[in-house]
Length: 432
View (cartoon, helix red, strand yellow):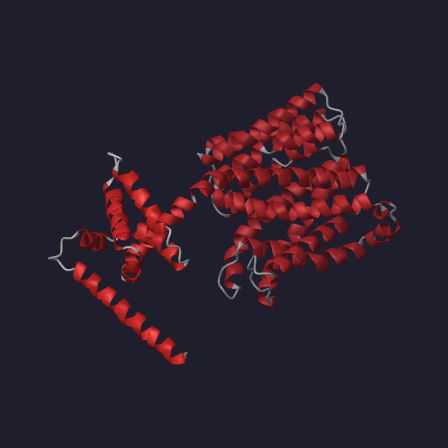
């Protein structure tokens, strides 16, 4: 049995070598046969497809190839590339099953350059559908996640009358860290390792990040969603001023005009707000300063943070993990300092299952915003991302008014609309 197996292997080797010799003869300049033309032109796409069938030992490709060749030959608009493919297919049909080794030899001798070009074209063809739907799907995901996150936080803080904003932030950040570590464990994502050198650089950014989250939650507890979205426009004003003084980056006249409109809309909105709450507005103004400070500080320390990593880079997922992980010990300290743990322990609402469902959903959505925003930014660009972010405030404001039965005067309604369009005008001004 063993000797017969060796003999068979030797026979196959000799037969394959003879087939290759035939191919070499076909490739000679003096040979002008149909087979020689097919070998010389060796259309990569045809042979790549056929090679897949041959690997599966599917001999029905011979019959399929014949039919395809006949149909293609009858088309008077067939391109030169198709003619070459037709010739190759007819040659395959004429060779038959006994000549499959010859085709394999041709495939083995295809140049690397031709194969790489075809692989590139193949990837482009496969990604056409993704290129068309990617921006749309990522944009919808980002809008749904951001809208739902704000509305669910409003439900937890207002509808359930839960006043422990720091504890809620801690719970949401814990969810994000656990999920990110699980995804990294299964190699779905890759993040930078947290080193003490990197943590020291990131602590100032993280402290502002914690203040931004906590102030945002407390403002949302006292102010309706529509006014929160309008007052958030003040962040753009502070950021623009910071860019001028810190980064020496000038703004065009349209941007300053849009910022003035934002100031007018915020002032008018506050004056006409029936449910005006001084504590809530104070928290929101503080949130605007902290959000702008977070953006400016992050931009300033980014290069230093990248130098503190082993790879010399810091992707968005690593930043999300870094912010959420480092914030946990600081949040625990704040809970003890403000005696919030005692309130949480005695609160009746934490014994309601639906409260935990909503709180967990808001935590998941917080992580979803991080991923969807990165995805959307990658699919489109900063300009489209900024514009959609401004447009996204419209459904958030409308949903906030309708879902929470917010009393709105006509003057306040127009102030909100004016502020929303001021945000859109600002995004378009930044494009120019």
